[in-house]
Structure formats: structure tokens, C-alpha cells
Length: 300
Image 1 (tube, rainbow, N blue to C red):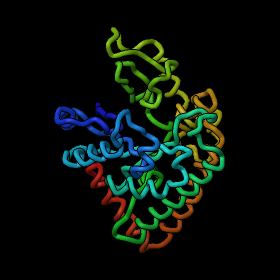
Image 2: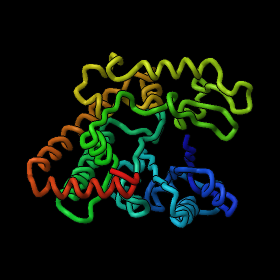
Image 3: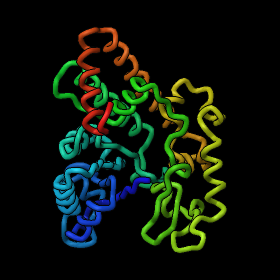
Image 4: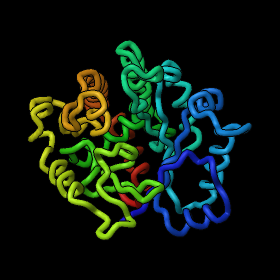
């Protein structure tokens, strides 16, 4: 069992540092890019910069050498056109592979929601950044990992596949500040998916077991919306929360999400194949990937 915390990093103290050092295995820290972008999307309740406080927390985390942490960036209509800038900024603050991008969980009528044009802009930027990452692994001794690159290497080189988009409700639960339990942290606040409370006896209600069975039984092969897609084992299906928000069904991925992912995978798979066909690039690529996994996980 491992314990993880998702935080915006704006509150930190010696007491929290001690707790994190002794009890928490991994932290996900929310940071949406450089100061102007982050503070515009995360305005503080007071006269201070949320960016400055989060950056201070990241520096403190670096001092806890045995603790791994990642940065999670939320993309909105305000920041989607600055994706390259956000990538460069956040990647410099964490080990390679430790930056993830998530599109804001908001209704399509929300002013922060991305339009179809915005999605295409994001997709183009993701392809460009991950293409550069693949080339750096094959052509340099200072490679960089990005989210898709990391997943692609893990799936192809270690012969894995993704039958589900994540482990929500199966091997993972999220505990909100009030003790409510949800299948994952992104469900927090949606009462339809509240499956118990740690203060109750028993803490899990009957809904939990229904959700667990539903998520377990509906792999990409059993999901009517995914079973015929060639990329199903690469993505595992779409985020349950996004699917529910957009389609009213946790198992029905929005069409533009599927289209964007297939575009990314088509481009990256073609470039991966070219690298594997060149003996010198393949050798350097494998050495860099092996070294990265040995460093980040203890073994490749």
C-alpha cells in the first residue's frame, strides 16, 4: 500500500514537511506554468502569489531526497496556446518524466473550456514536444521525457498494455479533506461517485463495490466504445471523469479526445519505428531509456 497526496503546494510548514517525509510516498503538486499563467489560473485568497508559495514547496521537496514528486499542470483556454512555454518551465523544476498535462474538468460552456480549435492546438504542441523527446533519446546524451514518451516506452519496451485508463476504484481510492471516499481524486466533489467516508462504520458503502466491479469488468475489450479502436491498448480508454462530464457515461470517451490521442500515437509510433530501424539510434535510445528507469524506479 502506498500513500499519495495531491496538493497545490501553497501551504507548507515544518510539521507538514515531517509528515510528508515519514508518511507520504509520492506527491503530485499542481503548478500551471510560469508565474503569470499560474497566478491567473489560481488566484489566491489574499495578497500573495500562489506561484511563489508553490515554488517554495517544490524547493522544500527537493531537500527530501528519498521522496518522489511530480508536477501536474491544468490546461485551460487561457493557457493552451502557451503549452510549449509551460512545458519548458515546469520540466526544469522536476526530474524528466515528472510533468503531466491535464485539460480542465469543466463543462463545455465554461469560459475555461477548450474549443475544438484549442484541442487541435494542444494536440499539435503535444506531438511536437514528444517528438522532440523521442529524438533526444535517440540522438543525445541529455534526453528528456514527456508524458506520452514515458508511456510509449513503458508500453512498447516492457511489453505492457493498458486495459483500463487508470486504476480508479480498483486499486486506488481518494480521500477528501472531509473524509469522503471517491474512486479517484478527480471524482472528489461529485456526490454521484461518493462511495463512503473514513469516519463511517464501515467506511465503504455498497456503491463502492458496484463501482469497483463496473470498472473492473469494463476493460477496453469489453467497452463497446473502445473495443474496435486500434489504439485501445495504448490509452486504455479515456479518463472516467472527463467521459462522465462530457458524455454522461464514464465509459464513453468524447470523440475529440479519441481523435487527438490517435493523432499523437500515429506520429510517435512512426518516429519510434524509424529510431528502431537505425542501429546507432536504437542503441543510444535503449541506453538512455534503461538509465532513466534505473534511476526513477530502481530497476529497468
